[in-house]
Length: 112
Length: 112
Image (cartoon, rainbow over all chains, first blue to last red; front, side, top):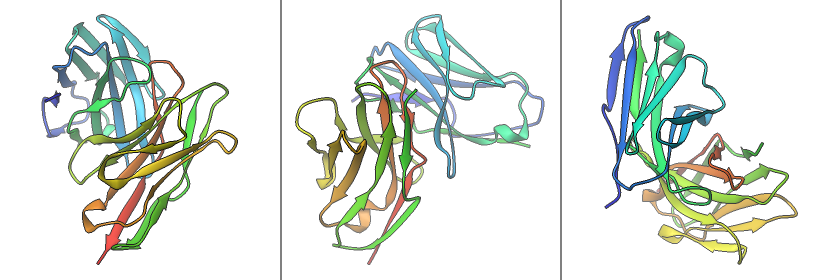
């Protein structure tokens, strides 16, 4: 069974902390994605990666960075967390254009 | 760049009634279209997708969608809904590149 896992389901951090969200996929997918999901806004793409060490900015990259050192792992980094980054974060992966994206269960991050 | 508009943020419907969830997209090139479903406290899973060929696409759980190029629409339908169909539904478009854009979502509530 295909799987995308995320390191935490729930996370509470303080303003100014550095936050790491980890995502691992076991499907040998080329592409990996990070989205944030907010009510009424749907999913917004933060960053995606189409290969190891390669990344592309999505629609809302400000305040975030990413790292992909291994094909199966894609990390989202909040350099200095702020309250407006409180959200649900979803990781996804796929083989390429036209292929469905497989999603992890999400991490609900609260920044106090 | 591609974009998606889901015309209804909430759709309440009674059990066994038909339902249509509307989706319009904007793109200047050929697209791939997807519908995903998100049950409470879960990640997204694919309902169906249109890549090419027949404009009527059948998916899981009795859902189907019709691609209309002239109207740039990809509406989702089910002839008879169940309580278990209560969820949030997302339309997504991809322009033969590596990223995908999602709509804001439609919350379907099926009432007994």
